[in-house]
Amino acid sequence: MIISVASGKGGTGKTTVATNLAFSIGKSQFIDSDVEEPNANIFLNARIKENKDVTVSIPNIDKMKCNYCGKCSDFCVYNALAVVPSNILVFPELCHSCGGCELVCPKGAVKWNNRVVGKVEHGQTNGIDFYQGILKIGEIQAIPVIKALKKNIDRKNNVIIDVPPGTSCPVIESIGGSDFCILVTEPTPFGLHDLKLAVEVIKHMKIPFGVIINRDGIGNKEVEHYCENENIQILLKIPERKEIANLYSKGIAFSIDNFEWTEMFKLLFDRIQEEVKK
Image (cartoon, one colour):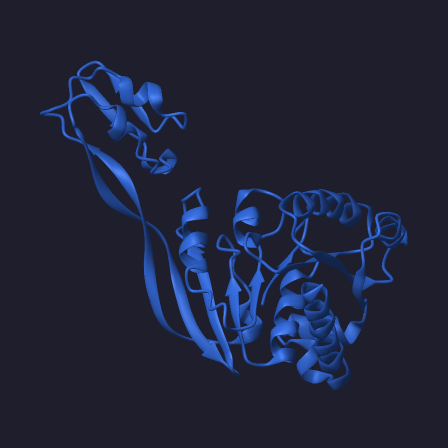
């Protein structure tokens, strides 16, 4: 079973939920797809044993064949190609490697080079098979790294995906194929606003989901009222507690320090399994 853990905004406790769930259920696979800022391993402490570069294909124009007709640049909606007098410019960061420029080139002048945009790291910890993607600094496209990361998913295992925050393309790519999605929010106006956005995305993707309210007690009851009105199940409430915050600041998952929370996350996992079976 694949469980993705997402949030409409950053800082709600998404990684906290994902890592505590992983520690509580034991043997599992953990995928940190927040490739722009992966931080799950602060809590998991997996020993990284291997890493692999993620590359994308970038057009390399053979100027001996090119007649500068401009068909490639006209075709490219991302403006990754530009034809200027007696020259053609390629902007690698804008290229989406769709291959369209090669298809429309009448002279067969488009060849391809590989460009490294990030890497996938792999390690082990406490029975957890851990993978994280890291986008290269300066790159703007996270999708290729997330796709490479998700190729390692073992469907025979219980898989937890720590999703990037927000509702953009990397989020949709990360959640796609999940059996269930946990949406983590906080009881504040900002939390409610961004939860509504995330709910619309998940509903559109037709993936079963539920909500976890983190830092319960700091704000108001508007998130609970919204979930009740929309018939969205609240899976768990994690209270605002000094001891939880203290453990978090030290990079320690609070379920490790508290048996009751371990049991609560196990019950959460069992509940999700029942929902998926339905």
